[in-house]
Image (cartoon, rainbow, N blue to C red; front, side, top):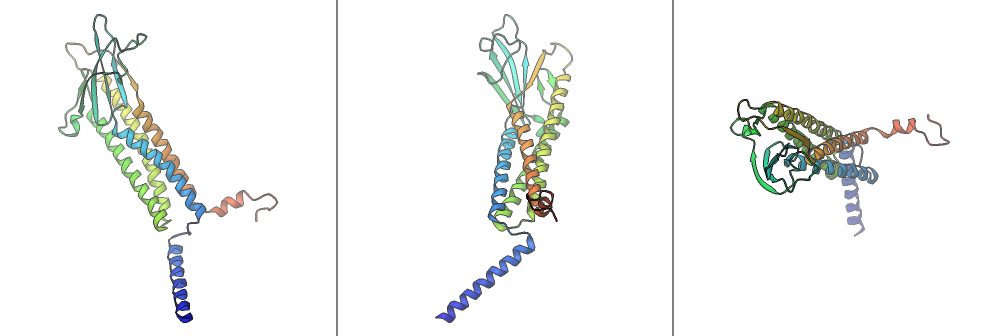
Length: 259
């Protein structure tokens, strides 16, 4: 009986030694403290990922508002994002009295939402007698999608680090998250240029195009927050890949001079 017990104990020791060698070839073993830090940064990145999906999937990036006209009971407003535009006819009685323009777009009214035609037919969209610049709008949407793909790859890398101990993927995950945040911010800037191009491309001829004002809305704010959080998460993951010994030599403990 003792012989079989010793045999199984030796086999278990061999298996553990083999796992240590395999993990040692991939990188430093994950200690509970290090694993906790990775999970904490992953939680931060998950917040950024949630905001990014919310921003890209909603159409409240910018609101376009016409000026209120005397003698009319209704006024027109619109809000749009990367994929869709919604025009709304609002009752002027619902609009705040101190506001010169129609809106905000969250007010109840008759809404007409359509997806942008340049994704399917290649045609521009006309909004309040103004024409979109499809190349810029398409570029903003494509960059945002690439950002989401990079974010998904970053999540996959970090999950592999935590589940399989493949710590060599930590640096790749950091790069993916940082790239995702950067792409989202670039997409926001391209979208801003598309809004300015839309306002300048008024259709000639009667009737004259109405005067418009614009204001950025909560979807774009979510995109900005997501980009910054993902950049911060990527930086934190990259910091975790750095060796601890150089930091210890730069910041020695009190009473113990650096070697």
